[in-house]
Every structure is written in C-alpha cells, then in structure tokens.
Amino acid sequence: MTSSGDATEPDDVTAARIRDVHHLLELLDLLPVPDLEKKGHFWNEFAVAEAGDRAKPDPHYIVGKLASWIQDVNDEPGDAERARRLASYCLHFFDKQGPAVGDVLRGCVDGGEATGQRLAQSICEVAWRIYVPIVAAMNRENDPLRRRQNMIWQLRQTGASGDGGV
Image (cartoon, rainbow, N blue to C red; front, side, top):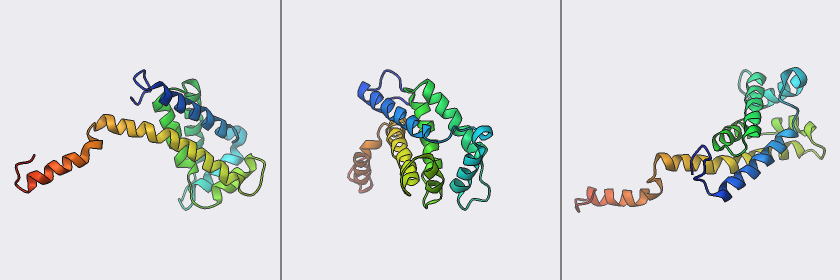
C-alpha cells in the first residue's frame, strides 16, 4: 500500500477507508460549519475546551485545519494522505480527557448528557480506523523489515555471542 492511495492498494482496503472517510465527514457534519464568521461562538467555546490547561486557545487554527482538510477529503475521499491528515487533526482536536469537549459538543446533537462525549468518541474511533492502517503502511514502506525484527535480533544475538552470526 502506498500513502497516496494509488492502484497498488487492495480494493477492499481502499473501499473500507473510503467508507470510513464518508462516515467521518458525516460525523463532522453534525458540528457547526467550521467558519469563525458564521459560527465563531461555538468554535471559540470549543477552542477553550480543546485547549484545556494550555495558555491560549486558538479557534483560528482549529477552524483552519478542519475546514481545509474536510474540503480536501471531500474532493478526493480515496486519497490516503488527505484522509490521514484529516484523521490526524480529528484525533488531535477531539481526543481529550475530561468532560469539557463533550460538554461543548452536546449542543450539536439531540440526546442525553453523554451525547457530546459520544460524538467526540465516535469521531476519534473513525479517525483512528483511518489513521492506523495508513501510517502503519507508511512505516512498512520506510522500513520493510520492521516485521522481521525478531529474526534480526536473533541473528545479532548469535553474532554477539561469538557463534559466527551477523
């Protein structure tokens, strides 16, 4: 598999990723549009919750990254690199400990007290399903022997013991 999502990927892997990308976009469609001019109040509140203990919340950064990558992924849902970038930002912004992010998101969906946390968790679960296989494949491309490290380790141990190994 290549990070660009070209024809060398198995069709079922690409199809699964595209389904997950569409689901992630649907989850993000539950949020107010990432536009500070139209929905600045929400995104300012979200930035404060997302920042947690950090000194300065940055709604411009959050809105800029989400708006840009949502558009790019929507234009090319099969592109692995675009999907990875959107998934990475979703994990960065929505995967937070504590209730603050969920409390802000609760207003985006109907339901009980846990719906905001459930929305954040759902975004992260889908983003994780997109992110892991893409990054794992990129790591294997960069180091094709990474799944053979035990064999390499054993050969080195044999060599270190003076048994004539590598």
